[in-house]
View 1 (cartoon, each protein chain N blue to C red):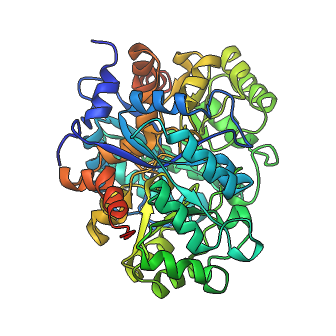
View 2 (cartoon, each protein chain N blue to C red; view 1 turned 30 degrees about the vertical axis):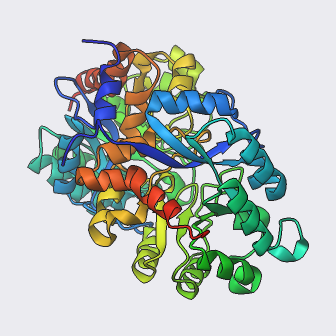
View 3 (cartoon, chains in turn yellow, blue; view 1 turned 180 degrees about the horizontal axis):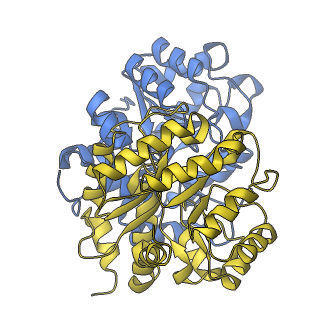
Length: 258
Length: 262
């Protein structure tokens, strides 16, 4: 492979072919209170995945953010059944329904979902203020991936990652504040979503190893290329891009199987 | 749908000069802007000075002319304030200065400078700019880049309707409210949207489909934002090559060519 291959593809608007590209942070469901989602149905999403060359997406529901999370999980299970090779489904739980967390996670696992999405900032609380212990235990016992909108302080995430060492913790949004935790804990990963400020990707690589970073776009909330292009254009090596774009997430999915 | 290797990009949203919330690893000089434009494949840019956004349009306007004298691919844009305070020239004098320096686009920052985009505040200016078809970029972003949508849509739509010949371009740090944006685009044929504010899923395709490709202007908000976001949204949009080219450069060029200085 020639160096700058991904840059050339991006400048030409060509899909990435022959590479492992897995988007670690996406939303499906098509309806959201904050804004209208054009082409938001699952076919519209798969159409853009093909356009960009994304093999798989790790997906959770819009409804689970600030509406009925059970309805949202139903939508994700349906999508996984329809597109088993393209969609890795995660269950979303709502922080305000603690009594339903474990039964819902059991139901979702039976329905083929293999991870958990936490986004309690949209539910009136924070991860550090919420007692998610039953959820962490469940993820640990069942070797699940958890992706969180915000994990709180690095110290808080570090203590969770140590205590629940058999679960996988993905930092859902771009940040450079977790570099120490990422270096120290093999079960913690950083997502690139939404690396939108000037040279965010390059800055992340200055403090975090490429094998701890996974690509996430936030589609179909944000536009797919909006999240993909900062990696393709980044002034870093193609091998680093390859790891971030999919090889790292592929290893995570192998390490934390359904 | 076609690949985009031949797309020519004309950036409608670039800034030069020291700015308040400078982020380490970013830049503020013209020389670095040119260097980055080369890397990303952006051939021309409409630029304003950070001083115009953050302290004085009068001084910023002077600085941006000086900064762009020595090249033909950086096009200066000016800014103005409501005339009563005298901080910027009265509209007729401002236009004379614009004509002299070949300034084709104006940019206002209602949120940053705490004034209203309303006829009582800007009417005298907007009447003159409308007669001359001078495009106005209405930038509701603040220097600290608020994450909430600051755009005053009611005022924006009122102004667009009151001055239907005035080309208006709206931008922001991020539009989270495309229901308002779409309604405004539907209500106001003279309204355009700048791409760096549009982050939502398949927005380029959807706006092209509903309202036409002529309604979107390519912009990056360099050096604050990474230009790849906007470039990727154009290059990978599932629209025709002609529509991509309109968004990437033709629409801005057409607006600039439409100015009637006589």
